[in-house]
Length: 120
Image 1 (cartoon, rainbow, N blue to C red):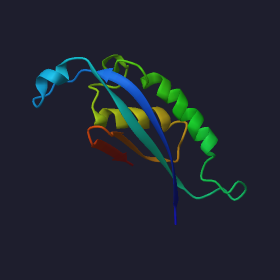
Image 2 (cartoon, helix red, strand yellow; image 1 turned 45 degrees about the vertical axis):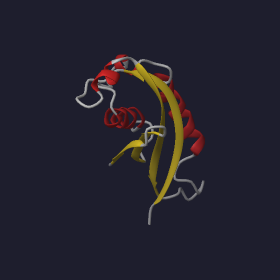
Image 3 (cartoon, rainbow, N blue to C red; image 1 turned 180 degrees about the vertical axis):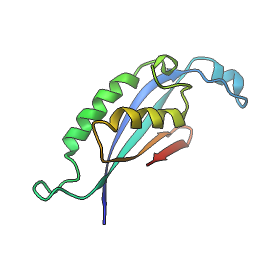
Image 4 (cartoon, helix red, strand yellow; image 1 turned 45 degrees about the horizontal axis):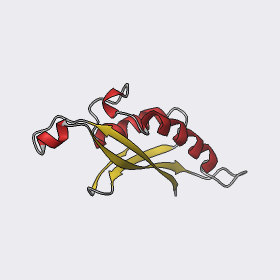
């Protein structure tokens, strides 16, 4: 039996995107409020009773959030085209070294109803 804990956060960011559908509006600089959630899976430590201290998770998430919040995503090194898929990968790659129990990342835009989940 494994336990899964999670931490949600959000960031506001602008971007452009080259795509076939809704091409004109996507090519212009525009912004979104992105929601994200990171999931950590494992067994609780016998001493602490926790899979991981959520204070540690929040600290790591806040450091990552600073790389995305109020930035032009097109300019974020290592992100690639600013799609939901690439945001999931970017978050996972940046957090996994410090949060080894990381098992999934979800990014969504509430206003559009779009989401992506990357699971290990």
